[in-house]
Image (cartoon, rainbow, N blue to C red):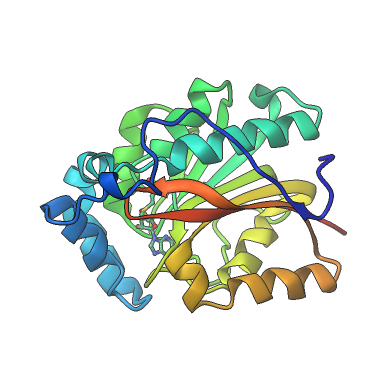
Length: 240
Ligand SMILES: C[S@@+](CC[C@H](N)C(=O)[O-])C[C@H]1O[C@@H](n2cnc3c(N)ncnc32)[C@H](O)[C@@H]1O
């Protein structure tokens, strides 16, 4: 991957700057929906209900809040494809927590064509299917539990955007994602800043690297995410 175990600055096209306070829009229903999703305490039943009700307006709501995760994480996926010395179209990709398919659409636009998606919410997955960007989509998959609906060690690349966020998944979900990726494959993951502050994700990455299971290829603490706050983006290589 060529970046070593160091933090790096990664850039992408930007339509919003989430760190610009003028972009903070805090008094509209789309902002309320995002906030409510953070209060679900990782309860799979409540998360599923919540996203079933949000699926129809999710894309418009996150757009209104300047969501840039899908675009940014896709640029990192393109970098990962270069590092793997493979054209995007040849790589098998798992979009974990694919939601309505915003990431799949961006990946397809950048030449990825072998994309599968999994998510807790069947309603969100149904929207993702409408994008036509995915080969295989599976709903009802709780990333807080081992993922047994896809083969182990299967994917060249895993992307996970907007899922390591408050009230959604534990840091240990990383272990379940790791199981799906082949040795030498790459994971690209966003962690919203408020999630990172309140979770053990950073420590979990460090511990997993110490165990020899992954190499931290790069992390960017200043990635664009949503108007309200940014995110850290992680690029991890599965070892062993
Ligand atoms: C904020 S959305 C992000 C969706 C998509 N990746 C994007 O960037 O637009 C969070 C997604 O995570 C899913 N999710 C929440 N908790 C989950 C869990 N425990 N296991 C799997 N998916 C979960 C939700 O159903 C939802 O689709």
